[in-house]
Image (cartoon, rainbow, N blue to C red; front, top):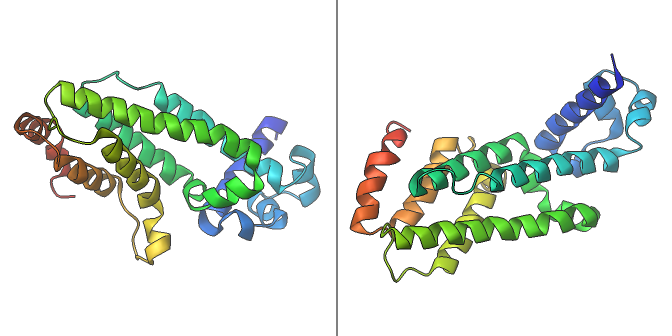
Length: 208
């Protein structure tokens, strides 16, 4: 087993445990046991749990950056729907990130310092998308773009952890996540926007 392979196994095991239990409730011994190595071997690759956590957060940051690069590569409605899909998948893969964001802010300030501008970029991209929607006459002209963007961002961020917060038996699925976001946006659709949405996006939700 090579060093890179072992490091990845440690990160995979840590991600599994963090997603299930949260950062604070996982010990190095649990990570070592899940990886199938000794704590001493684990320490050879990562000095402590904080180093593991920072590595996972760095991966989340990289994924958000890559997602932001996809802005505007499709038609307006499909572009936003793609963003919803990929954001959900990112949150699903790194569930601890959403649920432990305050923990990250308190205990990993350098990492959070890199995250904060990315959060702002997500909001800015949402605003730009909705501004384009208005220009394309997909949304009503009088819509408050900043208000709409802020609310969509909050929904995007907190819906993935709704199960843990509310005690629901089942998590929100990808289609449910997208559908609820679109239902909020749809309130502000123009006639043209409603028609294009019904043709391009809504058929995917049938049966979900």
